[in-house]
Structures are given as structure tokens and as C-alpha cells.
Image (cartoon, rainbow, N blue to C red):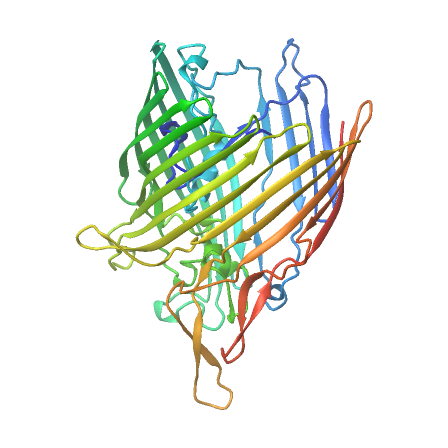
Length: 569
């Protein structure tokens, strides 16, 4: 369904929208018009299919096309945490897509902004806490522009559904999101270009929250019913205007930008003006230096739930784990929108980002990138919560270095090696507007190494492998236990400092082998995908003993061979 996918970790241009971390840009692919085509795939853990072709009702020489695809995967249940849950539980999200497309003259990269689809805007929020930052790819040169006016983008409509549930709690959310964007580009000279644009997004959401009262789940002192079932609706909007000049002088390219955004929801509207700057210098055809700086904003939400039992419902809660099992805190962000109900009070999250990148083209296909980055976040929440309690401004700071050696695809070989050294800490702002960093951030992974290598062999064979080595995520440990009086009393945990311990180091090797047969009307491929080929017992969490005197590891997926077939026609 996509013609391109681009990850921009930081310092993106104003026309990409709002996000305080990185973004993922998904470019929809135009469906084929030369007949009906598609594919079907089946393996041990997933199945999928796609059909595309011209519209049957069209009679023009360039008829519009449509494409639809669906997929279904079944996660494995191999860790002890699944077998020891205290109640049946599921964490489910489902989605399907239909993408109609019509013939259109493609816009050159420099004359209109990045093709940010509605799907990419959905991912802006999901990547907002990702601390890994890097400069976006090289900005296009002015000479690539072929016209001076960019056409407005078509409106988009998206439907999102998701839910989390345990044996006693449930929350489901449905979003109907409309997006409209328009952009105008003018180039008065060969060296100067000016882009002016505006976009708006309206999110009408519906949330259902349900709690079954067991063992005091709902506080009876608040005179609430034993069974709580509520449906609530709300609307949030995000609107913005942006201005992006682009000036090229010799080997220098400078692009200062400005974006003004308005966010509305429950509570006072939030307004932000974010300046940004990108610069590029190419002293040699094989050397390029890029600098980026700017401020980025996005809405934040503080839950005002009248039922404390479901006020902080997260993906970790939906697993229904034994209370002695401890997982990394980062898992709660698997789908942060689930915990945003219509009573959540609107706030503003802002981030200041700095990054510098040096790109070296070592050979025709081999490139080296070295990137340094720094970021400071601030969550400007409402002054008081639903119960009138004051809320302090939270913040985080991230800095690090990333090195990537990449071999572009050749006739036989492709791959890359990337290493990131990073430190992320979180804290609060004091009365003098200074950030007091106290503890590691939930995403603080000090070392992250990824290596990928693929080789194309004769007779349409291909083999590829991926190796990963990552420092464990932080978590809050249990440092002891207190046993209450009585012969049958339980032992209660005593927790240590927040995020003061780390999971063990993760490393894994995956191998995939493909074989393809080309026929007159079909292409048949078979593959063997072996994950965790040397059966590394990677820790997903820790399982404390009954008296909290020791731990054992909750391991993740063991060696998993998957055999499948794919047929295209």
C-alpha cells in the first residue's frame, strides 16, 4: 500500500506538522491501472492478501484505481508471564485500509512539501517519546524545482480503533479524523524559494470505559456503583500555518522556518510559535555537513477520570500479569491514546532540538554518517488536576551520538551497521525555570547496535541476516518485602528508587532465506525466516519470588522458524 517510508528522527521542516520527537512519513502508492493484480501470503504466524486495479466504472484512458489489503497475525504465547496471568486478558488493535487514487501529475520534491499522509500524522504521536534523534535526509536543491506553484493537497479521512482489556477493566476508543492541508510555493529567483502552507486536523473520538468491582477495585467511599460503564465523546483539533524560505548560495543551503500552531480540547486552547533552522554545507562532492535547530510542539493530555481505578489504564495493565512480575516502564506507551479520554485536560508539550550531521561518501555505494544530538522536553500541563491538586511541569533531556555505515543496494550486496550512544534523563522544572534531572528516562538505552547484511545469490536465491545488541530498559525494582501479621498473611513488596535498575542486555540474530520462481503470469516466492537463531534467552521482565527475596527471568520469544509462501499475479 506504500511507495515509500521515511523515518525522520528530529529537526524536521515545519510542513511536516507537530511532534516533539521523530516522525514516520508514509507515502501511499498509486494503484495499478493495467489490469487486476494482487498477492496472497501465508506462513505459520500470519496471513495477508491484496487486490488492486482500475475502477470498473471508469471509461477514460487514465481511469482511477483502487487498492485494498488486509493482514492478520497471531502472536505467540511462549513466556511464563502469559501462563501466570491472574485473569484472562488481551491487548488488541485492529485496522484495515482502502486507498483510492486518481491520476495526478507528480510534484517535484522542491516545489511542494513532503507527502505527509494522514497515516503518517497518526504516527507522529506514537513516536513522540522516542529519544533517538538524527537529521533528516538531504534537502532538495533549488535547481530540482520545475514549477513555482504547488497545488493544494486533497483532504483525508481516517478511522482508528483500539482497545485494552483485562478480566476486570476495559477501555475502547474510536477516532474519526479529518485532515485538510494546502500549500503554495513561489520561486522568484534561482537561488530563493518561499513556501507557505496551512493544515488542520479534527479528531472526533469516542471512549468506553468499564470496570467490574472486585476486591475494592472501585472505591466505595466515593459512593460509586459496583459496576462502572461509561461512554464519553470529545473533540480535539490541531491547526497550523507555516512559512519556509529556502536560500541556496554556492555550496551553502539555508532554510529558516516558522510554524504557528493552535490546539483545542477540554480546557484552555494552547498556542505555540516554533522557529526552526536547517543549514547544509557541501565543501566536497563526497562530504556534506548539516545543522538543525528548532522548537517543536504537540498537545499533551492529563487524565481527569472520576474513577481512580481506570485513570491510568495502560498497556501494561492490560496484560493482567501476576503482581510479582515487573516489566520495563516503556511498555505503557504501546498505544498512549488509549488512556486519553474526553475528560483529559489539554496541555502543551514542547521540545528544543539541536543536531549536527557529517556525511561522507566513501565509495560509490558506501556512506558514513556521524550525528550528534541534544533535546530538552517540557510538558506544560494544566496548573491543577480534576481534584484541585497542583501539577508540576515535567521535563526530560536527551543527548548522544549515532554512527551509521551503509552499503546501498548493488547487484549482489546491501546492508548497514548503526550504533547509538545515548543518555536520557527525566525530572521537573523548579521555580527558576531550571530542569532538575533526577532519574533515567523510560527509554534510556545507553547502547544500541544494529547490523544488517543481505546477499543476492544466483538462480533467484537471497539470504539476509540481522544482529541486534541493546542495553536493557530501566525499571523500578523491588528491594524487599514486608509480611503482615497473621499465619496466612501475604508479603507486600517494597519498591526502590524509580528506574534505578535495568533489564539484562538484549542480543539476537535473525536469518531469512528466499527463493523466487518467475512464471508468465505469476511470481511465486517461498521463504524461511528464523528469528533468534541461537535461541538466546532474552529477558522481557523479572519475576520475583513469593517473599521477594530473589528473582528469575521472564524470557521472551525462543528460536522461531517460520516457513511461508507468497504468490503474486
